[in-house]
Image (cartoon, rainbow, N blue to C red; front, side, top):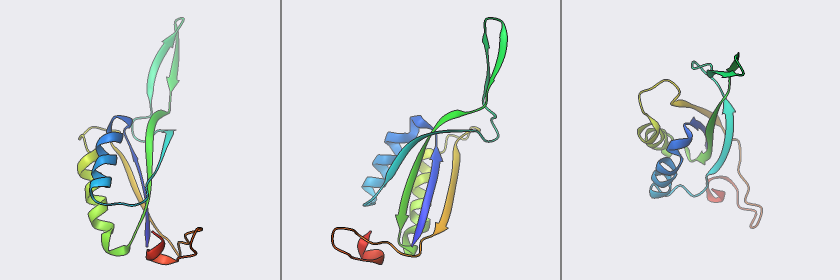
Length: 112
């Protein structure tokens, strides 16, 4: 199993969520987050003073998928989040040792 953490633009949330549900992804966690990458935020002026806002609103999707669906899901995320502009986001993939469904005690892929 692999855990995919995708950080994307907030305006892509509905598009990406619908695409993942259409692909029959059973579990998605979505968080509103703030961060910066190559953009380094933006500059605002407040009463004549320059203020550098170095974090931007983003949306983080967390999904755990079986190994055989990893590339399919990454492709869906890229296709539905990519605008071609700086700030489209990042995808992080990590190994998941186990998954346990609390209600039934099922483990592994069966618990997904």
